[in-house]
Amino acid sequence: MRLKVLGCSGGFDYQHRPTGFLLDGDLLLDGGTINSALRDGEMKDIRYCLVSHAHLDHIRELAFLLHTKSVIAGSPLTVVGHEKVISAVRAHIFNNTVWPDFTTIGEPPYLNYQAIDAGEWISIGDYEVRAELSNHRPTTTGFMIKKGGVGLAYSSDIGFGASDGKCAFTDFLTQNLDIENLIVEATFPDRLEDFANMTLHNTAAHVADFVKGLGRNMRVLITHMRPVDIAEIQSDFEKSGIDVEYLRQDQVYEITAQAGAAVPHTSTWP
Image (tube, rainbow, N blue to C red; front, side):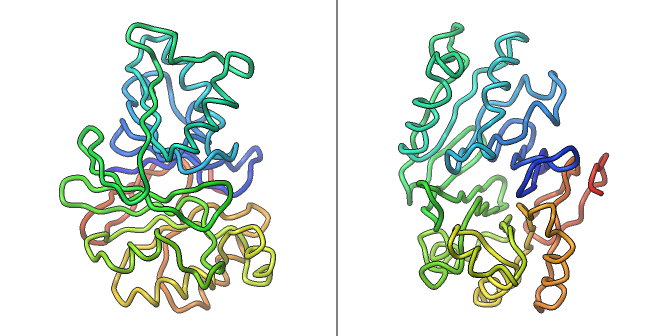
């Protein structure tokens, strides 16, 4: 699978964009950044978006993606997520007040919803997708994605320091060895552990403890660092005893069954 990083920041400013990833040109992992990073032609064939939770930094550009699709006659978009996440997106974004309800626009409609139960594998295009509940508020799921014999886990926002780091997402990842790649957040430096636990986010130490506990080699891709804390978080990882890669916006990564290397792209990382 080819992963394009549209945005991977735990904040938003002129250099850093919030969460959005594009797999193989047709499946989004969250929608915090889409139009800000893609040309119209790159958005036309996006068919699915896995939405982890309804925080604005994970959904904000779905509205503009749907507008673009209606202008350029792009393929319909299916938003996939837990029923509570879909309910929030439907009620608070595509409600004909904040933004048009694109389930009533177009023939066929430009927007469809598909609920996924936690713990359920479903087929979406060429992908097998599973949602698992995680430690974050409001209702949040991480996703397991499989395609062509390759497995990728995406934590979205999660707090490994809460509930001793245990949740359905971590339990599944611990027990299933066919997921070789992990995109995981590390929002705060280790010195802010108490704040990370309160807000249900990770520090570098949280990620390191979890990865060591897996007892197997896994490619670990770090996302969601707060811009003001990037250097400190990276320093914490250097002391942690695990190998990680830092995702960078506008770069493309090959996700394989074995550890792979980034494919250089135009990067705006400072």
